[in-house]
Length: 169
Image (cartoon, rainbow, N blue to C red):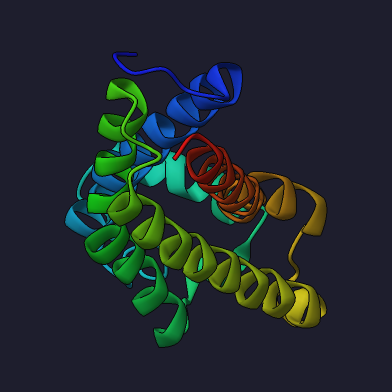
């Protein structure tokens, strides 16, 4: 990291997390759209067997992916299209030590709030509809929890960085 961070260990943790988010947003999810489409698992019509196997493995725990509601498809698409640039920006900001700039911090807090909201909505729906869809809640919650927990912790980190920056000024 180029600039001094008041929280270097946390910043390395978040750098790794956002790098994984980039991988999911730019590889894992788009492969699903490209090779399976929204209804590919439902009709077993994925054009790539490896991608189909990966997603069918997850869908075994979360069967809603075999007949995904439109709102969920839109939420996943919005994550890929709207939030993936923030993941890339976060990797860059963490790598270069620019996390505590006012612009990044402001955008970061908004995006973190959106991510936490989306995960609360999604996981609440999964819990309420688990019996209907036959969802295995523990694996689904454990797999998806980082997309809510990491942004929540990151919002705390951004807020603490702001206090440190104010104290230095």
